Length: 212
Image (cartoon, one colour):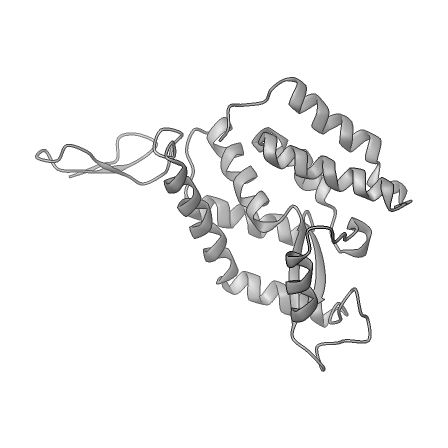
């Protein structure tokens, strides 16, 4: 039996105790393990998409085919990875998921992938090109710092659009990046660190939606 008479179609059987919903809701994602698997599935679907492969190829064809940390290393000498700096792909997926749950009440993997595609297309995610070796080294070093100014894309456009999808953990990660930008002397005026910090602190003050 398929019930299409609501905004979240369900599949079920009169003899079944439970039904299968097409979209996830806050209730169906209450279990943290189910939530994590759902987010991972969305991330994995995006990484394997034709859009992502074309996006990376386009970025490299436009000249970003070298390691940002060791610029003498190009795609001719080593594999160049696309590093999602701010937000990370995981952070972006969670914020989109939370945004849709808070505003629409339901979310699918397709919704998240579509929003990730739009965010990349509109340069709303800060990416930094790194050689595979340097990429691995960065993730293994908890003290490593990369500036937003070393990357491509304005992450604050993403924050502005999806700020109601923030979680406390993610908001602290954004604030930490801003603090490090100041400590390491980032001077670019477009960062507008005071304004971005105020947005994040205001969200924390208001407690934001209940997230997990």
